[in-house]
Length: 165
Image (cartoon, rainbow, N blue to C red; front, side):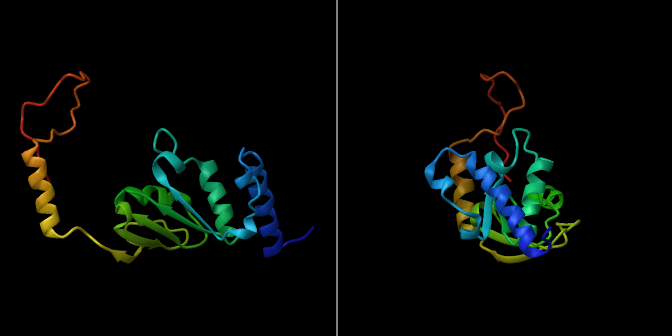
């Protein structure tokens, strides 16, 4: 039996091809893993389940892809702190690039990080300037945007003004 990188790549190719056979479109069925080197995934509505959790099966598949030479990347509208638990659970064998804040920041987390809050590098970060933040806050105040309610009555409207942070 073969071993080493070639066997690992072949094993990954076989699993990826098995997954692609389950797809209905000719476009996906004709793709081969050797054509691609990166897998980039959104979190909400894509990688995470309905409970907003990363399943162990998904984490294991991404670890396998990473071990086989694919770059696994995450792209999300979430803030950086909102991805830490998922980065930690992934425990990828290669560094993990994460585009967050709807594209305003890109972080790199080291392989198999156990402390993503402290173990990360920022590749770029483009925060909103003060004038834009002021304009958004002014717009929200002018339109009296209500904070989310915890009352389960859909007709309930808060009587207090919104709190803008």
